[in-house]
Length: 293
Image (cartoon, rainbow, N blue to C red; front, side):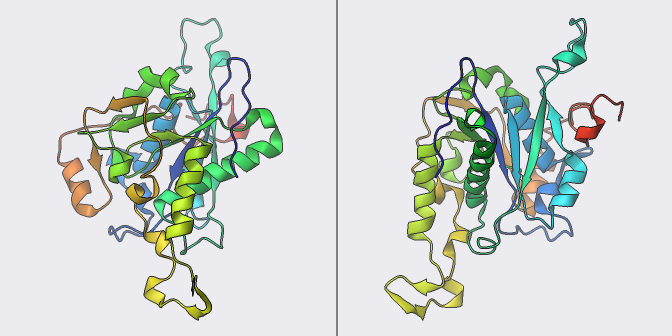
């Protein structure tokens, strides 16, 4: 069970959750769906990581199957730079003021793979893993809130930078476009806490089917009806999440969860430029301080 992290004076641990593991989309490429290009040398999962950095996350947790993790890590590495703390030219020693945000890769548990692993379940499993691993280190680093963002929604992630103080507090925060948000099955970011986590998990546990009938443990459910939770959409899982308080309307937004939608975005004239490699690129912990451009 996820519990609220203890508060330190002027401290707040915002954990970014990026769900990658889930049911396959219709692209049919030999690489994972989250690796679709959205700009020159700019991939969908990289945009999601950059959004977490813009939101002020202290850690980023990418939930992906272990067979896809090596290629995704090859693009992202171990950390990303905080955009507000990078290249502070007015400082005497600017590199000493930089802040790196660690990226962790979370494989879906084998008992859930092809059973519960919808995109919404990946959000919950990432939060649960972030909680338990942080708790093993210290109770002082347990996340206070979780920021979920998706590779399959495209909008300018830097529009949320002015709202960082609103994101890292006890109140809720969510993005919307044209009056719609994650409760309308849109890939728009939102924050959630421990109570929201339990409410969303309850939907999967109570409404999702298993292998056997709940009323007759010896009677198997037909194959096509088993493990229905893996097909649950975001609107079903997060319909009761207390999304309130702070809403930010993004100026433009495109879904890229199928080939037709991706074509609409690429033909829209909207453009996202990839941040410099010194901020978002392949970096390893043992290369910190080195010029690895």
